[in-house]
Image (cartoon, rainbow, N blue to C red):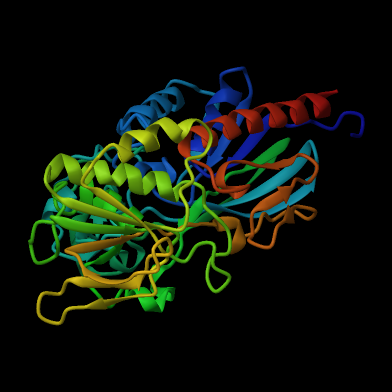
Amino acid sequence: MADGQAVSQTILVVGGGMSGLTTAVEAAEVGYDVILVEKKPYFGGRAAQLNKYFPKLCTPSCGLEINFQRIRNNPRISYFTMAEVEEVTGTEGNFTARIRQNPRFVNEKCTACGDCARACETEVEDPFNFGLGRAKAIRNASAISYPNRFFMDAEFAKSEEAKRLVSVCPVGAIEPDMEANTVDIPVSSIVWSTGWTPYDASKITAYGFGRFENVTTNMRFERLSHKYGPTGGKIIRPDGKAVQNIAFIQCAGSRDHNYLPFCSRICCLASMKQTTYVRAQYPDANITIYYIDLRAMDRYEGFQKRIEEDEKIRWIKSKPARIDEDPVTKDPIVIGEDTLTGIRFSEAYDMVVLATGMEPNTASSRVPVPGVEYDEYGFVTGSAGGVFASGCSTGPLDVASSVQAGTAAALKAIQTVAKARG
């Protein structure tokens, strides 16, 4: 560093899921300035879309609210939502990050009163609920969104209806003409924690997702089970039928070189957790889990044993060959072979839930810094000077492990700042 050249004391955290939030609050609470950048309109990442965590089966709103409160109360944390890091220049200890702030079309005057949504007639497919149900074109993503401020879909902002909604807002928060802007920010270190996307189950053509209405995925099932989800938490089919006979298929597309070659670690436990959702609503429901092998990583074996005590859960060691559909009842029919007994089966269910795996967002959107290393799946395996990856950018992790990874990344980022400061 040249004499007299200012050294930034700021840490940039990209991604506002559990790992990124943890990095931000841990670094800020020991005295470092943090810029937190999130692509979506809200913080919380995939955890915000869950119904419950395993193994305690508590709601994510608890852990998220604590972190949101820590952000609110810490003046060292500044944040951008609906924003992306377009470019990073410079070197360790002396980076410049170019951040594109995409328009929210609702400014900071918003009080989340909801008058605009009530007046809005246009509805869109709800991305927060993975397309299950509809949402207003101007809305808050969820009941626990932070920041608690509405946003408007970009296409809708161009409409005449959007312009009419300006007069509906009592505080003048709606700006359909809002434009994107960019800002360059000097930072000393960067933590990349952009999370994961559920594997696209429609690619597994033999399982009929997208063609059969009663074949769904594990993340969609989380929203279906949530009290603020599209059915108010009722586990029912689109035709309103109660789900009394349900199957969970493990490794749907995972550990398969035709689709997603690796194990995502959490899928077995997620399906076990979801059996408790079914049992709570339907005490006499029949539940079947098709599995290759069961993986309850680390300290979670006790949770697995608890689920195995349920006598109405049937475990079949099999990777089913395909799913058909009864044209009259719309029941999905699972077809395959029990690999322990060699007996072939063809069984109908009210609903089938596919346990799809994690695809790292770094597989499609790389860290804009040279020298970062990736494995063949897109997970970050090696950091560049002053640039670190955290959470599910580095591999499949559960929520607790993501929090631990975020704390470790905060320490690495702090060490870079201290090194640059000399």
